[in-house]
Length: 89
Image (cartoon, rainbow, N blue to C red):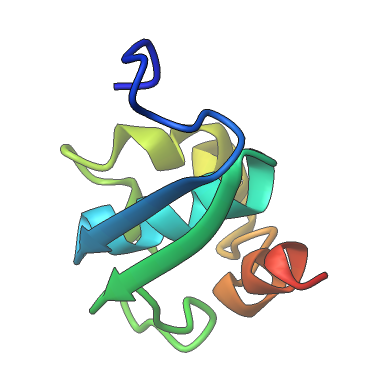
């Protein structure tokens, strides 16, 4: 969509639900073009999860960079509130 002439590339907005919700949060944290983000059901603490491997199962391949940490040490090296903090001005 950014290749369209009627889209302002310097001020992108994203919206996502569930898995798309935390993807929207991550995009806003690491892409400076994103100026507004809406996440519906896409934020929850990870550290309290009973099933630590829930976030690294099939279909969640974007979490694979932290898989080794979860499998070997049974913890995640980040928490969603830390990703949210990256968005704050």
